[in-house]
Image (cartoon, one colour):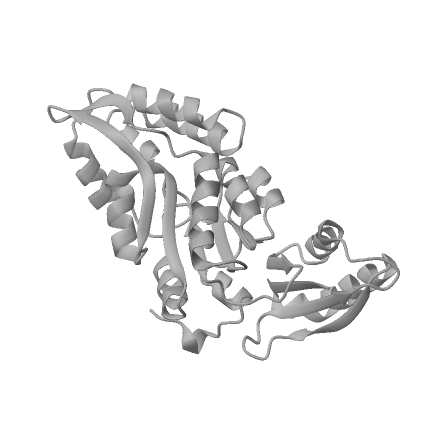
Length: 297
């Protein structure tokens, strides 16, 4: 069995759905059911079962992407149920900024550092090396720039607080894991309601940044391990959701029951089970069948 849920433009939904079902069946799979979710009437669910061959998630995804060029999507090989664990990236996922890029602006280095960030998030550079390079460029910046940056630049992504609060209300554990820094992640987590934070630490001495990261770097392997460890504490078969946007999120997205890429770089989007690109983060709640009247603001 394969389940696909998508949020698409209503005015083209009927024709595009008929086309998608035709192409899926031409590929040798049977569409056992198709229609709007009873709980969320703007979410379409397709259920595919084996006919001549087992449904291929990648092929089905490509068909749906072609038939619904504007959509948010989740594909699953098992029933889609509210997760017991939510692990999320922070920068450009739970907040609308890359903290190190905004901090760099206070040192007059935003363009230079942002270019490195972009390449790292696309998977073109080793994350740890790119982080060390960027932090090194900030050596000598006043520690006070962090608080100023937080107050003036860092804002939650639309829907972030509602997503976290609604999942928590349903018993889901929430963890923020980031290749960014505790100086930003701790207040962001407190604002959004995350229960636990894993992040890097900026070196500070005599009121200025030292240009170093203190301790081991939180990279893609650490993100994945955090998800696995947290899921393990919940017990065998715990349902997990991961969200992220960059290449360093890929192992975490792949390790989760469902990995959803949020307005992501191409490599992260390709590795995920689905994506949110057109709505805000509350689209995840809709894909899980949680109706708007049950959201926690």
